[in-house]
Length: 89
Image 1 (cartoon, rainbow, N blue to C red):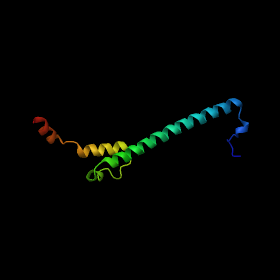
Image 2 (cartoon, rainbow, N blue to C red):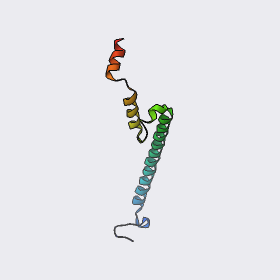
Image 3 (cartoon, one colour):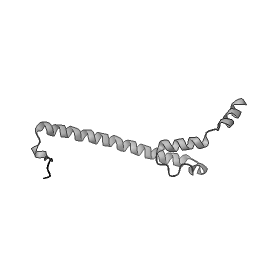
Image 4 (cartoon, one colour):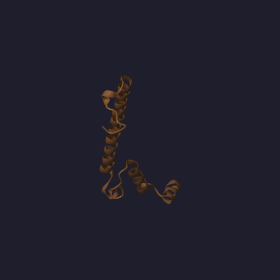
């Protein structure tokens, strides 16, 4: 065995309990991460599917959902002069 490595059988009962708790926490965190990753992937697919073809070119290659939404907002938001004209009517 490599130096500094302890086998499971040499751990005390308290250390084994602590290891079990750490494993459970890790599994819980990993499960939450996978749920969030799946949700974000689904949202990304939904956005890409809903956006019309002429706007798809502005979001191709963007991996993050937030960056996709920012790119779409920048593309479809009214520019200041158009907003001012719209508000003055």
